[in-house]
Image (cartoon, rainbow, N blue to C red; front, top):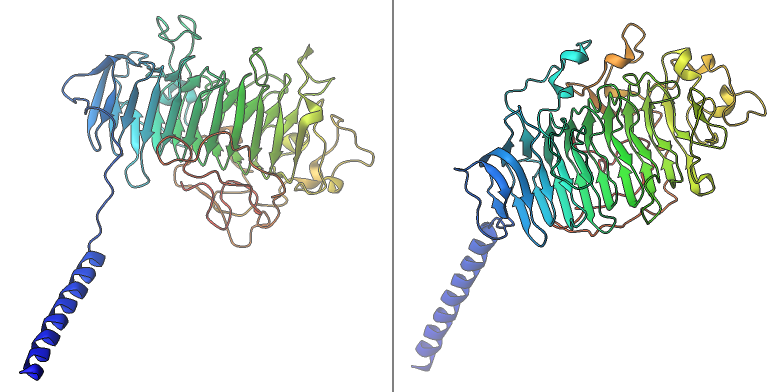
Length: 471
């Protein structure tokens, strides 16, 4: 009896153990998707968005905009992946954020702010005067003086930046040309990452005060006859890095301390790729790549500039545009180097270090300064850059260099081009990593940057370790 009893117990234990193992295997096989972030009530798709709203715009839903939209102080509007926000295209409607806006797209399901009736004219040599990218078919996203968070991830901002009628925001005048994204609160947090800004009459992004992280975005057709991809005024501190800029009217990022707000403007501009920019701005001395002026400070490293009208610029005591004196940057607190310039004409080769400006050549720049600058060169001096025309091709995966038979100013879109580096690119391994990023925003899935990518040993927005731009 005792043997039989022990056998029964053993069989029960074995069965229980087998059942537990089976349950564990079953649990391991099941993958439960995390629920999408949501606040408050779902916003209905039946009524056009207008006036004060809060809550959540649901994933994969389409919302039409029927007027200016306001997110009140202490309120939050969340936009889930795959949502589409559709503007009519005949009115400069804006999103005005007094509280928090979280546009949380994903790589698989980006969010769209767009005008679906507008057709991209991404054709080489197309006439910009007829291009809808420069018509400003809706207004912009504005962070009011009370805004707390504007978090924009994996989001398309297309065809915005039109002329305002009655301005819905305190720091923009009636009738002013809008910016696609603009804010005015030095304490507010702005994150723009892994997103696309396509078209604008003026600056796609102009902050008048915030803590920002602008990283891994693509800027195309920024500004009609003027405009920077990012035009910073006083009260701003943050990072502009791993961005691809193609065909900006003037510069990629520009820093200025104009406006009298605290803190002093400080920006790090690193690991950006800037292509064929500066050609829709006709003013002498204007346009091309990176720019520090009017009391701003920061650094500029590891930027890859291809056929841009001018190389990096720092405004010094003698700089001027057409005889008009400029306000000097905080030159004592600006550092730069390890920047890469490729040029296909003598005219732009003569402006790798722009004439009349104060940026100093760094021996680690490409091309090597000593290969074309005169002995005892002084910043701002005129020189002959013909020796470096067509040299040091960065070897993009797909972009035609040299551009000797094409107008550089006609390149304004990405299209089928691929600005990643080939394995044999001379930009690989030539970057500088010896500085710490300005981490002024939180790292958070919903209320901050997904990741703050540090500087890379490779130059440009697409380092070979795949930590940079994902587009």
